[in-house]
Amino acid sequence: MTGEFILRHFFTVSVFICLAASVSGQSGGSFTISKSVIAGGGGQNLSGGSFSLGGTIGQPLTGQTGGGGYDLQNGFWTTSPSAGAPFDFDGDHKTDISIFRPSQGEWWYLKSSTGANAALQFGSATDRLAPADFTGDGLSDIAFWRPSSGFWFILRSEDNSFFSFPFGTSGDIPVPADYDGDGKSDPAVFRPSNSTWFISLTSGGTSIRQFGTAGDVPAVADYDGDGRSDVAIFRPSVGEWWIQRSTLGLAAFQFGSTTDKPVQGDYTGDGRADAAFFRPGTGFWFILRSEDFSFFSAPFGASGDIPAAGDYDGDGKFDLTVFRPAISTWFIQGSSAGIQIAQFGAGGDRPVPNAFVP
Ligand SMILES: [Ca+2]
Ligand SMILES: [Ca+2]
Ligand SMILES: [Ca+2]
Ligand SMILES: [Ca+2]
Image (cartoon, rainbow, N blue to C red):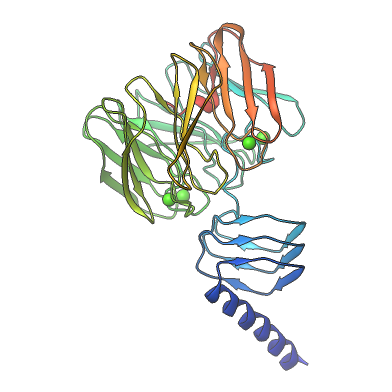
């Protein structure tokens, strides 16, 4: 009886490993994968008809699960199958409209799942916003970095308790992201004075590396789609991007000019971040497609608007978004949901999704 079970178990594992070794995707009609081990993550696609995954173990993977109806049961993944949306405080995979009010040290956000408001006090006017999912539960944690002391303050999304620790020093720029691909954002700072990155890896250890030159600004994202955020800079003086891709290696190119604001993100939905910038003087967006390095541009916003890109409609593609301070209004061009206009905030507020735009 036990032998029969083991044999069947072994058989399904063998079948899947064969598939994994020979193809990079699963497609077609209905199929089921059970009791499997999925190895060699990165860029697999599961698509086609309805399918289900049961009892699986996955290695770091940012492939997409798409196609028809599907079901993942009892899965264990070291990173989420989809990268998720940034600035998602209620965990529904949609970026939330959110502001920081420096005068009071208050965070206000609109839960995209219910439309309800949430507000809390955490930080003060001189702190730097550093929200990210440090705890790895899929929800962004409200967090800030205090320049005067180099301390991080992170409010756990699980229970609203906070923890604090020193990492960095005055003059640094907080650049938290998941550099090691374990599903938890790593506290990190970029030190402009010597262009050095200090990354406190949640998987253990500290990574210190020099990347960039004087005047560069950080432009972190996962450009090669391997589930690990990549150290990257935008060089305003010449409009250059330098990206140390964690799997694909160094990339450098010219895209933009001195006064442009880098707003990198996955606008095309292929799982890889696109270099992108917002031109404040004209309200134009320019996106360099990761697929083929062609670019497109679109007007969305006006002079004086603050770019606040994210995935507000949760379709896996960044949405062009601006916050207009004069009227505290959000303009979102949802890649699936269409245009949304919402008043949220008050004079002096800063849109949270602008936190890492220099
Ligand atoms: Ca949300
Ligand atoms: Ca991490
Ligand atoms: Ca990467
Ligand atoms: Ca979207």
